[in-house]
Length: 251
Image (cartoon, rainbow, N blue to C red):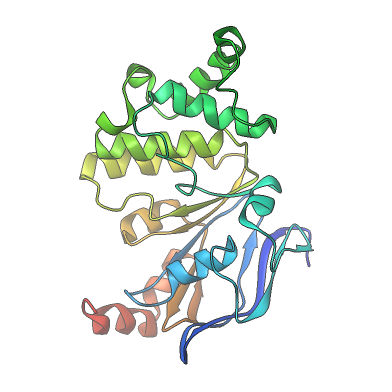
């Protein structure tokens, strides 16, 4: 595996009782890039994501991260290696504040069990680091807000902050702008661009304007197989890709 490839899959396949959701996917993600996984509904994007983080077990095929095979490793083991899926750990404490949520995520990085029984002084030591992350995602004015009361777009920003608290080398973003207003989409797009400065990002995203703005490389899936790959200009001109999107309807 080349040094500049941080994540690679070989013949990655997932079958559900005779239905092939992902078929022989060979994916290569370059270190330091933003790589988008796109495709019409039912293309296998989410299944592929779930295979990468082992929320699903592949029927066959291999997954390599930083040159090491991680096929079959547990999600927690993969996260500790620096490959973290945003939104898998987040919003788990809807009735805690923004600051408390980020502080708990920072505790995970330290490798300790949650310090609920520790003194407030010990937890306060994490406040500076938590506030830096909160500020980085544009939530400084919301640090005392209970997570459940945040506007939707701000909630996603909090989810990115809790992921960043684990200091991942590679982030998997699962539809970071889904269901957002135009203003929120712009804010989260800028945030993803900012946090990708010194790490690798692989994202599933439906919004093609977000994909065109952010992505260095795009992999297009259709019916579980790779249909096309390249930068946005290349992929958007591919007649098979155009047909896949326009011919897919809403199914």
